[in-house]
Length: 150
Image (tube, rainbow, N blue to C red):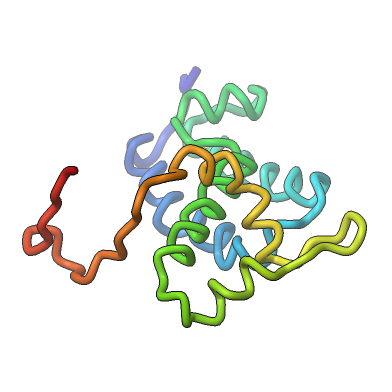
């Protein structure tokens, strides 16, 4: 599959993609995540165009490139990032404006505001964590955080 491929190691190329390209594709996803599927396909195409030269796969499908590199398709990453943002918001104090807006947003027809989209995408997660108490971590250094189980 990579016959005739020259240059850096595939693993290094994938790491460079994750460090230099992917952050630009994912920047502020929770704000613009309600884009159309056609626009998501364009982002997916950019991802595949960046990864094909890395693995030397000129004529392979986007699915094959994603399997080879271990990179998730963009629509899965979009959902994951929205769920992360949802958890970040719901662990805020009740006085936080974003948390209040999350529970009061509505949609007009098929148009979503960003917080409404995050809420809808995160419904399955919300059902799964129902009854659990999420605690916002107070420290940034994992060694100093204490995890307790109930």
